[in-house]
Length: 444
Image 1 (cartoon, one colour):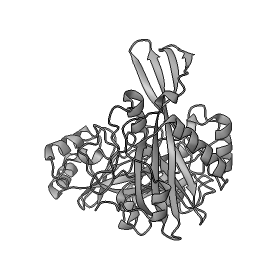
Image 2 (cartoon, one colour):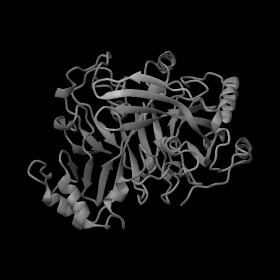
Image 3 (cartoon, rainbow, N blue to C red):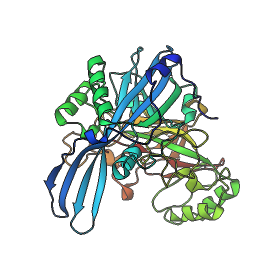
Image 4 (cartoon, rainbow, N blue to C red):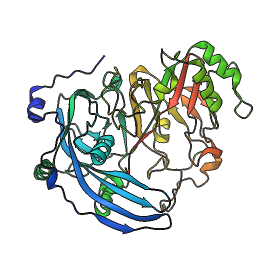
């Protein structure tokens, strides 16, 4: 079922005059200055190029509880950092301003909409003369925050299913992505600044770009958000249907270093080297709901930065996602949400939970990362001055549950990373394969 395209009159008026075009008449107005930094041991030099490509995002939503219309209409500026390496060639990393836009609602909540990195990459590398790949039924990725004063945890709308489940707070009305210009960028910035009213932890009139945000501004944003970062990571699992014969083959083929659980168990968490599992998937062919497993694993994430329509459209396509199919997404809760209360003092164990229910289908849990400041933090990052609330966390257990069923007693896989959440695949004997689908974008 595809998303409804008709917009209410107020929303149509808000985005009137925006047409799908492939040129940029005002591109000559872009700042042509660039900044060059000296290189180091492996680099010759690093060149910071200013924005030279622009596109506009418009999107409309209705808050189900109040009937309020939420309209996003902003211009994204795309620049680039070009690194000249000593022993290879050069690499280009785009900069996106803003990376996310956040709007408050009248009932005290907030909605975050994430921009599309892929369009910036295509525009910076190829310019407006090349098709930039935005479909007419584009479906942006958004996060709903229950409280505009705390943007550290929210619910990500990863697929079209999210708008139709009972926990959905939003109705999607439509969206468009169009080539823009420096003149429109300037006009949008002036208008946004003149109309802006500070609400909660909303980070100003021009959105937020995480590590690309100037430090004084970023410090103020974090302070306003209770000393926590605005979430930049979402966690969940994709559920893929699997025939009984494949499930049984997996159960009987586990290598010695990753033994299968007893036959009485329902779940088989796969950790470590899982090439043997991929070999089984490849040999099975298109028997997973009529598709191959790799097609589900191609669901758009970091590259496209968009959500997915039920008919497998609406996101910015890449060579990885051209033949992908949608899977059922379910959220993986961080520690404090799994326990039902904030974790700020040491505990004997730290459970995490995957919610598998039609009531949450299509959603991801965004925030509460082990690597981010806040009550869920347990892992110290290099150079991070923030103290841990439990320095002995490595000696504790991290049980993982699907709903109320125990999947593994300790979801801490020490040989494969400093954190947890390391079980990439979970086999459900009732006929499913769960594949972990983390979505991250901060600092891009």
